[in-house]
Length: 193
Image (cartoon, one colour):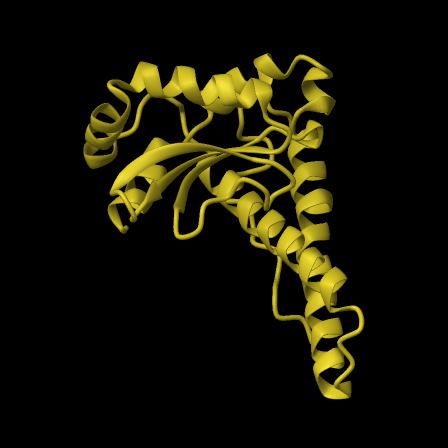
């Protein structure tokens, strides 16, 4: 029995400007779905290990669990951030970005610098331990994450996210990503923290 299911896109496959329907279909329906399926498979293997009392493969299972669970969750956040018309965040999130980064422009410059150097993800997170927003570079879905930090915005910088549309020119993909952000939804999510 599967515990986890693929979450539908919050927009139509062809709704994004500069990110093709084909790119989204591969990314969502194939790549993201593989994390959902892998997480279900790992959950079954963990249940089997518990029933048998055989934990000889526990290290591999737990590393795969972390990787696939994080991959699933980050992809869901990534797709939830898209489907808008870009621009800037609204209300409380705008004020918090200005407070913690000096300005939206400063935040975006840092975020893009991380995107250019990251091998996996760039995340805008709220860290309750200091009450501030931070940009984090997260490799392999689960390396570089900060415990307790709440992701608000996720940019997938793995090649599977842009290569069909842009080949090795990921900076054009970053531009398309920002042009399609749904800041209203992102801001609403931040307001619920």
